[in-house]
Amino acid sequence: MHILLFIFYSLLCGIAIVKIPFIRKSGLRPVLLLLLFALHVVIGLAHNLIAYRYYPDHGDIWDYFWNSFIYRHRLGSDFSAFLADNASWTHFSHNGMIFIQMILSFFSFDHLGINTLLFSFPVFLGNIALFRVFRDRFPNDPLTALTVFLLPSTLFWTSCIHREGVLYMLLGFLLLSIHRMMTAGYRTGGLWRSIVSLLLIFYFRSGFALTLAAAIFVWWYLEKPPFRPLLARIAFGITGTLLLSILAFPGLHIPAVLAGWQKEFYALYGHSRLPLPVMDGSWSGLFRVLPAAFLNGLFEPLPGSGGQPIYLAFSIELLAIWAVALPALLRTRLKAPFSIFCILFSVAGMLAIGLFVPFAGAIVRYRSIYLPFLIAPCLHAIADLGPLRQLNGWLFRHVYSQTRMTLPNN
Image (cartoon, rainbow, N blue to C red; front, side, top):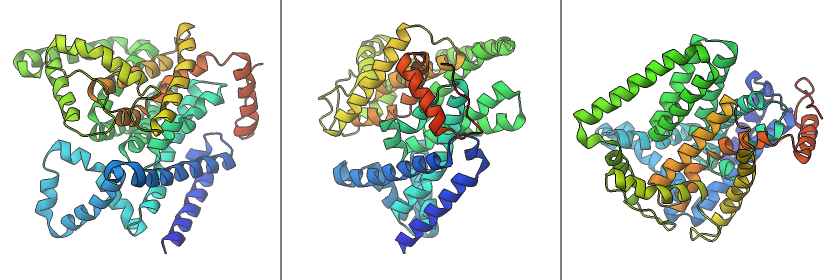
């Protein structure tokens, strides 16, 4: 029965991809859209198998799936235990993926493979939203826009039922709403969609939301000069509030808070631990950990580190990305507000990961959704080079539909 159900849902998703106007407005050919979605699903299914075979205790994906049965039982027959499992914000936020599994299992009759297929569809919609932003912000450059779909680690970690997939989806919807407000004018609907998306991102990963909000603030400030006085007052108010909070509650000063977050990761167990000094809650302790955080967050795992053969593939991918990024950064052509947003968001996010996370495997996963924002503006900055210009010309003729085609200048 599950095989027939998988085929049925696959056909529904395929019809929706071809028919939904939001997807069709991406400008990509229908055949390519179907292939990209199929790739997304296949990688998600493969991830489930890899996790079951190689991850300790089969990894978080299977843990969420199995716990969803326990939570569903408690929700129906032991509600007090269900409330106890969600008594704190940490537990309530962490259990978000279990809630998603509970909902998906209702439609799949408790089958993880079908859950992965159903989960892939809304995540793919978020990918389409982000692609539309990249397509407009990096014009005449389909190669850069397609990085949304095709970066290996991003695809690997957002195709399975994990937080990265949810965050990547919400990020696409959020940035598309902000992009529309910046280019087509202020709209109440777009503002509310942006607020809801940001709140959901905060629910699933609060630190990610904070770095994202700061980068969006800078983007808006650079792109919309009329708003700069208002944004400056907002920044002044936030800074003043933080300073007053630090004075009123000395235990909440920044190094102590960061040391507490790092301690939560240090308490975990993993096979791919990397060297990372422990923060002691002082400013000197914070500065002491920064070199290791920079190395771990931006460059680890280096080839041969991490302790697992699969990390070599991620190491090669990361080295290739930096091989593209460094020449672009040296050319100092990243001056567009959106490009600055991408670099600020990705580098700040990866540095934060290196500051708290001492495991190569977790770093690879957390960093996966930042990588498109690192490589996209850098790749676009060197798109005028001969081979890349020729490749973009070929992509224009083969990936875009005729109604969307606008050939680049040769």
